[in-house]
Image 1 (tube, rainbow, N blue to C red):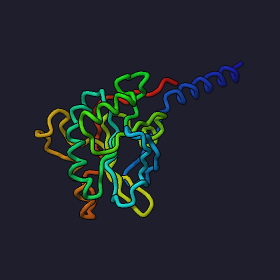
Image 2 (image 1 turned 120 degrees about the horizontal axis):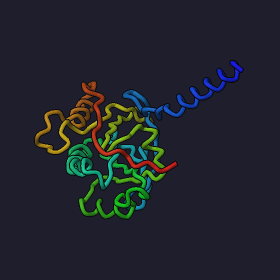
Image 3 (image 1 turned 45 degrees about the vertical axis):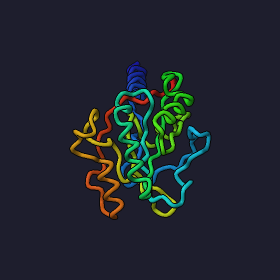
Image 4 (image 1 turned 30 degrees about the vertical axis):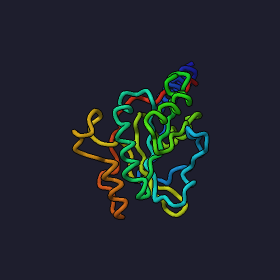
Length: 205
């Protein structure tokens, strides 16, 4: 009888523990990141290895509907204008489930990209595999990756800067500082920060 009770308690404990296991945190600085092939708003497929001339990318997981993402939108556009010509263009990715957030549908993505005159790719991560693998949880979250041969290595991850509302009030421009360091072949002094924003709308299991 005691053995049966013990077995039941152990099984219940194991079930409870498994139930609270958190998903993997995603990539850490220094990791090689996965390549991807995602659909752009122009209908074409975009991948990290699709442009042999780049030195790296500013990969931003963002969306149409999050107020924080909207507050950072012009800063994302500015980052691309500043660094695309220097070899670090922006790639924006929307992983929100359109069934839960209709404003993040592919059609709405196309409209927003046109309205804001995006000069960079705006991709849909329909399966959410890329967001989960990278470890994106909030919008916006940035992953600055540097080319190393045929691979891309994570050099910075986190927030764009330290002010979610006003770019002119930001005193720490994390992404800009990271890319500037990489362009000078220097170590990124602040390689990880906490991304603040809306949670990604995950598909229901």
